[in-house]
Length: 498
Ligand SMILES: Cc1ncc(COP(=O)(O)O)c(C=O)c1O
Image (cartoon, rainbow, N blue to C red; front, top):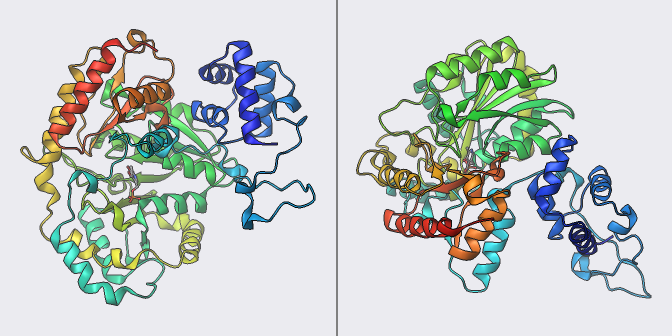
């Protein structure tokens, strides 16, 4: 069966029934079928095929024959571009088609998803796009501190070989001292793993933990890599709500409600991407108390911990949980504006006795990838010690601070838009009045904004936020650029109706 044929037939059947993509999502929800808008949009655009159970659901819902829907009545056309080694077709042989693994079927990563594909297509056709979709500081003029670049260049010739799997001693020592400052309990040098960004370690830590059927609590909205990696590892992400009414803090009652005997761990993202929330001590203590009562492991993603504004203090949850097993993640991509160097780390702390076997798994996976990028490890000590240039950005008069002030006010000045003020990081997650704009699909909103105003944002569903009423803006561009973007978004929303 071919994806293109399936996509054509799906579209035809949808048209015949007067169905929109969002209708599937609604019906799926009422029938307890796990199906997101991005999945449907990938099927319709011919980018993915559904699993068998989803295929049954689609055919039943559309009241069409399943075999017809997947094109079983058509001979498979040879598609040379999908064939490895481009074996010539001879004697009418039907060529085998290579598909992505079915493990990827429920994996979503819309920060670089279908809307971004459309932006790329428009760029290829010569259109200039303002990208407010990825937290990548360098393109917006945030430069790496000179000392970091200088120190890396000096050490480059010493970084030609693999390092030990967990990382260079000097890098891990600096991270250990940082962990001491953050009061992480019971950490020694062997509890520190460096990675090619926090991203690699999120993947590694989920793969080492989750068996099929294991549940893990992940915030909604989340940084979607957590949900994606938990799914890819075979686990079941269960989303708990972060409450916009309460400055986007996690909703404890919702967390409690979602714990089952299969729940192994809870993930928090603090400071939060996409909301910009910073969790106060009492909130963290409540999470610790729940984790303690239900014997959960805690994963805390703290990559924005040095980008906290308004004189507030970042508290590592692990410092409040010496009796629990915690894994704390951080790195240099954001605070040191060196996302491209790829360096992050994770620190194991607290009650390590209960996690001996898990730690063996982590070490095994860490050994299997040999080591993280060694030149990037070589500057961890420089970056974490001494003068922290990032502080200039987050104080009044600094770029990140002033851009946050601007975007917060400008968004709230748009009729139909409200936003909670971020306390940290460089993202804001505004809410749209869906009734006013008649919005039923936030991905369509993102595509419409892209096509009309050439502005790329990420829709809320891309962060596993279920209602179609939010989007995320990266406020890294300079104020003049943000002003232009806000003017365009305002004029777009002036008349927008879905
Ligand atoms: C919350 C969060 N965690 C992890 C990452 C990945 O960071 P890294 O560049 O270290 O892989 C990001 C990147 O945007 C993020 O927002």
